[in-house]
Image (tube, rainbow, N blue to C red):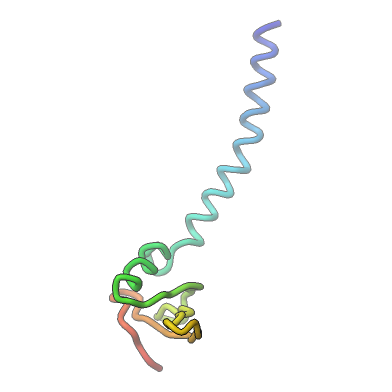
Length: 88
């Protein structure tokens, strides 16, 4: 009886773990831009005094919503490799 109960518990645990693992995998791929994690891009820009959020790929650049010290927001573009500002 103990073996049967253990088998049921193990099966249930695996069934609950699989959706979570699939979700974790999809989060990691959505969190990258041009091979860089969004977290690292935001951190690098913050070190330069740029408060950037809502990062996304736009062509060969990174589009970001940037919040100024007065609270206003603008859309700015950054080089995908150097994270330096670019203009179009």
